[in-house]
Length: 182
Image (cartoon, rainbow, N blue to C red; front, side):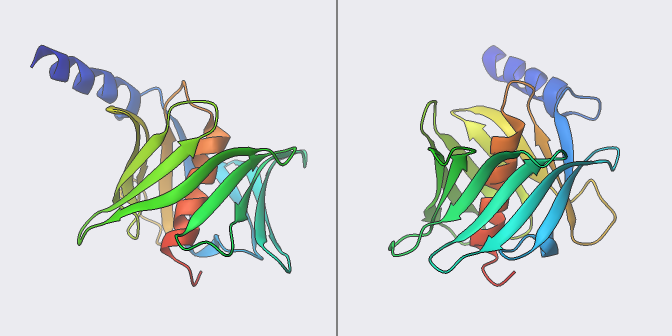
């Protein structure tokens, strides 16, 4: 009981109103292969550009810093039975794979297989952008629309000890997999 209380206290210190998590703004309708869009910080400043490339064999979303340097990319994996998207580093090395794990009526469950670290578990309502990303029992990121009054905008909060660009890439991959017609 005491451990759970301590975990909730720590989570609030990270994801609460004045928590230490880094916050980003995303526009849900703009995230599609073939489109370019920007990820903004909580002050509304552009911090990353996502360059959508439509290729013949597979689609690619390249995440770039504001100087144009490629940080990572998402590759849509074709010819697979299950939906899978690979996240690669700037050199094209596979860093993570996002897979649908389980379908339930109200909540989706996804697994993020991290190549050089513990896997992440994604649970919640992906379609409505209300979900959490956890490493075991510990929440490492939270996605929600409730922070914004602007339609089609949602927020991503990333814990300080996480790699922001990887969490943002996972969020974009989930959005593309959950909203295939975007």
